[in-house]
Length: 202
Picture (cartoon, rainbow, N blue to C red):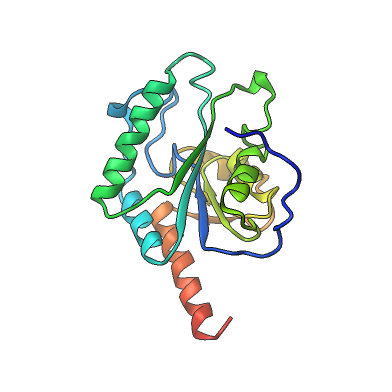
Protein backbone atom coordinates (compact mmCIF):
# COMPACT_ATOMS: atom_id res chain seq x y z
CA UNK A 1 0.00 0.00 0.00
CA UNK A 2 1.43 3.33 -1.01
CA UNK A 3 1.42 5.90 1.78
CA UNK A 4 -1.10 8.69 1.32
CA UNK A 5 0.32 12.00 0.15
CA UNK A 6 -1.01 15.52 0.09
CA UNK A 7 -4.72 16.26 -0.50
CA UNK A 8 -5.70 15.41 -4.03
CA UNK A 9 -5.67 18.43 -6.36
CA UNK A 10 -8.30 16.84 -8.62
CA UNK A 11 -10.98 16.42 -5.97
CA UNK A 12 -14.16 18.18 -6.99
CA UNK A 13 -14.62 16.75 -10.47
CA UNK A 14 -15.42 13.13 -11.28
CA UNK A 15 -13.46 11.97 -14.30
CA UNK A 16 -14.68 8.38 -14.54
CA UNK A 17 -17.27 5.94 -13.25
CA UNK A 18 -15.76 4.36 -10.15
CA UNK A 19 -17.12 2.39 -7.20
CA UNK A 20 -15.21 1.27 -4.10
CA UNK A 21 -16.22 -1.93 -2.32
CA UNK A 22 -15.16 -3.45 0.95
CA UNK A 23 -14.42 -7.16 0.52
CA UNK A 24 -15.45 -9.29 3.50
CA UNK A 25 -19.15 -8.98 4.25
CA UNK A 26 -19.86 -7.19 0.96
CA UNK A 27 -18.55 -9.42 -1.83
CA UNK A 28 -17.98 -12.58 0.20
CA UNK A 29 -19.28 -14.03 3.46
CA UNK A 30 -17.35 -12.73 6.46
CA UNK A 31 -15.98 -14.73 9.37
CA UNK A 32 -15.16 -13.62 12.94
CA UNK A 33 -11.99 -15.72 12.68
CA UNK A 34 -10.88 -14.09 9.39
CA UNK A 35 -10.93 -15.45 5.85
CA UNK A 36 -7.70 -17.44 5.99
CA UNK A 37 -7.70 -19.51 2.79
CA UNK A 38 -9.25 -19.68 -0.67
CA UNK A 39 -11.56 -22.44 0.58
CA UNK A 40 -13.03 -20.00 3.13
CA UNK A 41 -13.65 -17.29 0.52
CA UNK A 42 -17.29 -17.81 -0.49
CA UNK A 43 -19.15 -15.16 -2.52
CA UNK A 44 -22.42 -13.77 -1.24
CA UNK A 45 -25.14 -14.81 -3.73
CA UNK A 46 -25.54 -12.18 -6.43
CA UNK A 47 -22.45 -10.17 -5.51
CA UNK A 48 -20.25 -11.16 -8.45
CA UNK A 49 -23.13 -10.85 -10.89
CA UNK A 50 -23.70 -7.33 -9.53
CA UNK A 51 -20.08 -6.45 -10.22
CA UNK A 52 -20.62 -7.67 -13.78
CA UNK A 53 -23.60 -5.32 -14.06
CA UNK A 54 -21.42 -2.46 -12.89
CA UNK A 55 -18.78 -3.34 -15.48
CA UNK A 56 -21.41 -3.41 -18.20
CA UNK A 57 -22.52 0.07 -17.13
CA UNK A 58 -18.96 1.36 -17.49
CA UNK A 59 -17.85 1.29 -13.85
CA UNK A 60 -14.39 0.42 -12.66
CA UNK A 61 -14.78 -1.67 -9.53
CA UNK A 62 -12.08 -1.30 -6.87
CA UNK A 63 -11.81 -3.20 -3.58
CA UNK A 64 -10.47 -1.51 -0.42
CA UNK A 65 -10.06 -3.95 2.45
CA UNK A 66 -8.47 -4.05 5.91
CA UNK A 67 -6.50 -7.29 6.19
CA UNK A 68 -4.98 -7.20 9.66
CA UNK A 69 -4.69 -10.99 9.58
CA UNK A 70 -1.29 -10.40 7.97
CA UNK A 71 -0.01 -8.28 10.87
CA UNK A 72 -1.48 -10.81 13.30
CA UNK A 73 0.32 -13.62 11.41
CA UNK A 74 -2.95 -15.48 10.89
CA UNK A 75 -2.13 -15.74 7.18
CA UNK A 76 0.65 -14.43 4.95
CA UNK A 77 0.87 -12.56 1.67
CA UNK A 78 1.08 -15.77 -0.33
CA UNK A 79 -2.25 -16.91 1.12
CA UNK A 80 -3.85 -13.50 0.62
CA UNK A 81 -2.77 -13.52 -3.01
CA UNK A 82 -4.27 -17.01 -3.41
CA UNK A 83 -7.57 -15.78 -1.91
CA UNK A 84 -7.62 -12.88 -4.32
CA UNK A 85 -6.79 -15.14 -7.25
CA UNK A 86 -9.90 -17.17 -6.39
CA UNK A 87 -11.97 -13.98 -6.15
CA UNK A 88 -10.75 -12.84 -9.57
CA UNK A 89 -11.35 -16.27 -11.10
CA UNK A 90 -14.91 -16.56 -9.80
CA UNK A 91 -15.60 -12.97 -10.82
CA UNK A 92 -14.46 -13.75 -14.37
CA UNK A 93 -16.73 -16.79 -14.45
CA UNK A 94 -19.62 -14.45 -13.63
CA UNK A 95 -18.55 -12.05 -16.38
CA UNK A 96 -17.15 -9.56 -13.86
CA UNK A 97 -13.85 -7.73 -13.54
CA UNK A 98 -12.41 -6.29 -10.34
CA UNK A 99 -10.09 -3.57 -11.56
CA UNK A 100 -7.83 -3.34 -8.51
CA UNK A 101 -7.51 -4.46 -4.90
CA UNK A 102 -6.14 -2.11 -2.26
CA UNK A 103 -5.57 -3.53 1.21
CA UNK A 104 -4.11 -2.54 4.54
CA UNK A 105 -1.96 -5.30 6.08
CA UNK A 106 -1.57 -3.54 9.43
CA UNK A 107 -3.20 -3.95 12.82
CA UNK A 108 -4.83 -1.13 14.77
CA UNK A 109 -1.74 -1.00 16.99
CA UNK A 110 0.41 0.00 14.00
CA UNK A 111 -1.43 3.34 13.78
CA UNK A 112 -0.95 3.45 10.01
CA UNK A 113 -2.64 5.85 7.60
CA UNK A 114 -4.18 3.16 5.39
CA UNK A 115 -6.29 1.18 7.85
CA UNK A 116 -9.95 2.18 7.65
CA UNK A 117 -11.52 4.38 9.07
CA UNK A 118 -8.48 6.43 8.03
CA UNK A 119 -8.52 7.53 4.42
CA UNK A 120 -5.12 6.34 3.17
CA UNK A 121 -6.44 3.60 0.90
CA UNK A 122 -9.05 5.90 -0.58
CA UNK A 123 -6.49 8.62 -1.23
CA UNK A 124 -4.30 6.02 -2.94
CA UNK A 125 -7.23 4.99 -5.14
CA UNK A 126 -7.81 8.60 -6.13
CA UNK A 127 -4.15 8.99 -7.06
CA UNK A 128 -4.06 5.73 -8.99
CA UNK A 129 -7.00 6.74 -11.15
CA UNK A 130 -6.26 10.48 -11.07
CA UNK A 131 -9.88 11.18 -10.31
CA UNK A 132 -12.03 12.86 -7.74
CA UNK A 133 -13.71 10.64 -5.17
CA UNK A 134 -16.53 13.13 -4.65
CA UNK A 135 -19.85 11.23 -4.75
CA UNK A 136 -18.12 7.95 -5.68
CA UNK A 137 -20.16 5.15 -4.05
CA UNK A 138 -18.26 3.47 -1.21
CA UNK A 139 -19.95 0.24 -0.12
CA UNK A 140 -19.23 -1.44 3.20
CA UNK A 141 -20.73 -3.41 6.05
CA UNK A 142 -18.92 -1.71 8.93
CA UNK A 143 -18.84 1.83 10.25
CA UNK A 144 -15.14 2.21 9.49
CA UNK A 145 -15.78 1.46 5.80
CA UNK A 146 -18.36 4.22 5.65
CA UNK A 147 -16.27 6.70 7.62
CA UNK A 148 -13.21 6.23 5.41
CA UNK A 149 -15.25 6.84 2.29
CA UNK A 150 -17.21 9.75 3.73
CA UNK A 151 -14.01 11.51 4.79
CA UNK A 152 -12.89 11.46 1.14
CA UNK A 153 -16.17 12.79 -0.19
CA UNK A 154 -17.58 9.42 -1.24
CA UNK A 155 -21.27 8.53 -1.03
CA UNK A 156 -21.44 5.93 1.77
CA UNK A 157 -23.61 2.84 1.20
CA UNK A 158 -24.20 0.32 4.00
CA UNK A 159 -25.12 -3.25 3.15
CA UNK A 160 -26.83 -5.42 5.76
CA UNK A 161 -24.77 -8.50 4.91
CA UNK A 162 -21.70 -9.34 6.98
CA UNK A 163 -21.57 -6.99 9.98
CA UNK A 164 -24.10 -4.68 8.34
CA UNK A 165 -27.13 -5.40 10.51
CA UNK A 166 -25.10 -4.83 13.67
CA UNK A 167 -23.62 -1.65 12.19
CA UNK A 168 -27.08 -0.38 11.30
CA UNK A 169 -28.47 -1.18 14.74
CA UNK A 170 -25.57 0.55 16.50
CA UNK A 171 -26.15 3.76 14.55
CA UNK A 172 -23.86 6.74 14.15
CA UNK A 173 -23.71 6.38 10.37
CA UNK A 174 -22.20 9.23 8.35
CA UNK A 175 -24.74 11.76 7.05
CA UNK A 176 -26.41 10.67 3.84
CA UNK A 177 -25.59 6.98 4.23
CA UNK A 178 -27.88 4.81 2.08
CA UNK A 179 -28.80 1.36 3.43
CA UNK A 180 -29.42 -1.71 1.27
CA UNK A 181 -30.00 -5.41 1.95
CA UNK A 182 -26.92 -6.45 -0.03
CA UNK A 183 -24.60 -5.50 -2.88
CA UNK A 184 -27.10 -6.61 -5.51
CA UNK A 185 -29.71 -4.19 -4.16
CA UNK A 186 -27.11 -1.43 -3.95
CA UNK A 187 -26.10 -1.88 -7.57
CA UNK A 188 -29.73 -2.06 -8.71
CA UNK A 189 -30.43 1.28 -7.03
CA UNK A 190 -27.28 2.97 -8.38
CA UNK A 191 -27.89 1.88 -11.95
CA UNK A 192 -31.60 2.70 -11.80
CA UNK A 193 -30.81 6.17 -10.43
CA UNK A 194 -28.13 6.76 -13.08
CA UNK A 195 -30.55 5.73 -15.82
CA UNK A 196 -33.23 8.07 -14.49
CA UNK A 197 -30.78 10.97 -14.35
CA UNK A 198 -29.64 10.28 -17.91
CA UNK A 199 -33.24 10.40 -19.10
CA UNK A 200 -33.74 13.89 -17.71
CA UNK A 201 -30.34 15.07 -18.83
CA UNK A 202 -28.76 15.48 -15.42
